[in-house]
Image 1 (cartoon, rainbow, N blue to C red):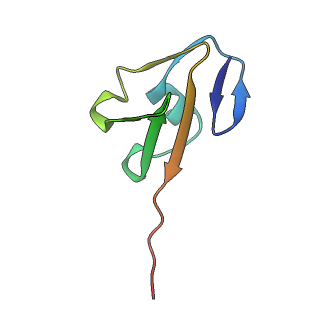
Image 2: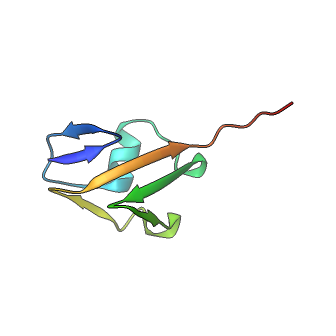
Image 3: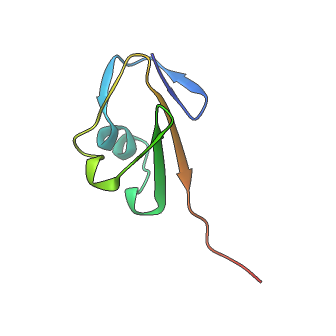
Length: 65
């Protein structure tokens, strides 16, 4: 299983980009942490998530006073 944002998903291997596409997540406005390390955007397409990986995906939100 792969843990993404605290939720276990029942996949053994999936590319990060495939996961983002399947979940309608735009890679332009996010940051991804893979196993406690920030993953550069240039690596999203080549990164394959494997059993035991822990991923945190954070959305950027604009705004202010």
